[in-house]
Length: 456
Image 1: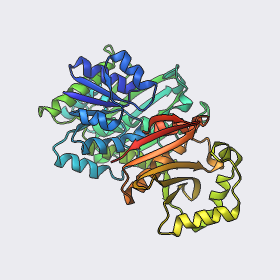
Image 2 (image 1 turned 90 degrees about the vertical axis):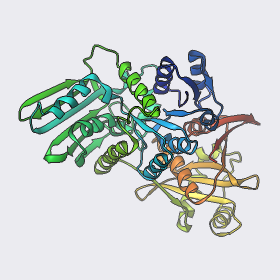
Image 3 (image 1 turned 120 degrees about the vertical axis):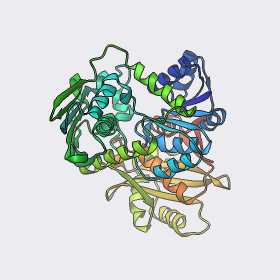
Image 4 (image 1 turned 30 degrees about the horizontal axis):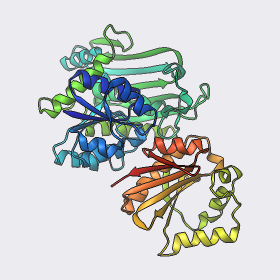
């Protein structure tokens, strides 16, 4: 079987290694110009130039891209007729997920969600003991996941990784395993309360400490403590019943943690062959995701929403465009006067012949930036995309969410085959942004770096 691995970071690399050990053929894809080739060299696997090329060559796909790309990659894989193994979380929002899962079901495709801790030997034993009634009537449970984020991958700057994103990163999203284990061991959960914050002790804007209270069937209550700030790692589960008490230390194990990863990959392959059902399918993972999102909402954590620009946005956008730092990144860095701006903006909004589409990204009622889609080279299904953040919200890790949410909103109303972006060579932040959003580097031209993303 040919399996495409989308995203060749640490987890994608691990899955590729395990697939090769399970005697599968692997084709990889990663838009990062360094990560993809280095993985290809180390593993000896073929790397596709685009996601579409990888999917076209494959029977099944492993989605190990950043979680902001999960839903888009899942949609593309289902549309390509591939069985899907998708890393947690299934997505970072619930809108549109059920529809894709239903299409996969109609097409007879497996959607297997990577909750590897369900394959941990102690979790398998705990679930069996609970099912047998060894603990009696369950009363309460406590799940603890505490670690020190700077120690995870010392060779990387964690402050620039996915965990630092205040919208799609943070300890609640990243520790979805604890939500899943509570659901898996005790039954579906409702979120009763949640609190989370950035302690600022490890210099990331996302939540690094969180506490959540869940209620399960029969009134069982469980609590989750999650953090990135504990220098002595702890990952434990306590479950109390009328007939016994169970304590699990997930870090105290003899066999390698990779055994769990290899077991879940073997299980995925068996599901494709029709021998097994997914240990965690898409709809079950969606129920868990809903709980995570409710917890974030109760904790007051940020969510980016987008809308089309309206007349009252005219002054905000002018101020953003004329910000000195922004103008340094423009091809023409001159200051834009009011008359020129007003003429362009009103034409873009109201003229039926306009080739400009402007979206405003917000957190609550605060406007955090603008994303533009301009018809490219006269083709009504190809667009040049650009982003302009509100200077007051710059540097908070929100540009990626603003860009991806705007792309999703634009595609809801417009047929889009191709997005093209061009940045100055010196605009390192934008270059990294487009790569992280699934754009592929195309070429360098007269001081500019060009990127494309195929969406057809």
